[in-house]
Length: 155
View 1 (cartoon, helix red, strand yellow):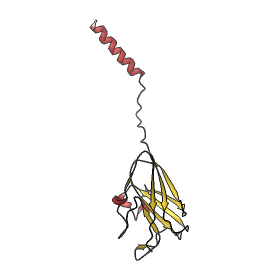
View 2 (cartoon, one colour):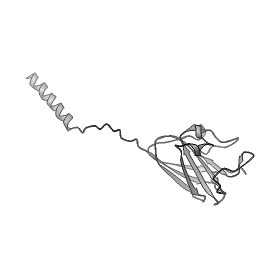
View 3 (cartoon, one colour):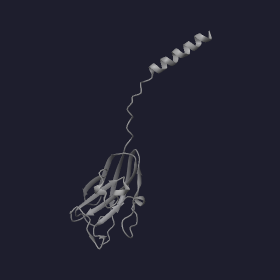
């Protein structure tokens, strides 16, 4: 009798295993995120906002455009300007924005001071030189995140 119960239980487990869907070897992709960025404080509607989003501190801020994994976007400079980055793997990022008022695709400086507007994620106060990655780092998880970048002008 005990042997019959054990056999019945074993058959029941076998039936449960056969009824369960087979697990594939492929791993489901991690959920990605979207980042919506809004810009404030533009002093004019001239030119273009050039934005670079990176995960690599070695390329931030001055070499963001050389980071092969960075994401770049451009949008006409105007009140209410915004840009979205989609399908972002979860992780830490830093964002740099340049108001390229003369559309020459570079930051113009005088004595090392930007002549055009600059902005960073988390809107750090800029004193002597650009902020470090750690000061502007923010996390993107699955779903939609939003942030506002306030452009700063020094000249």
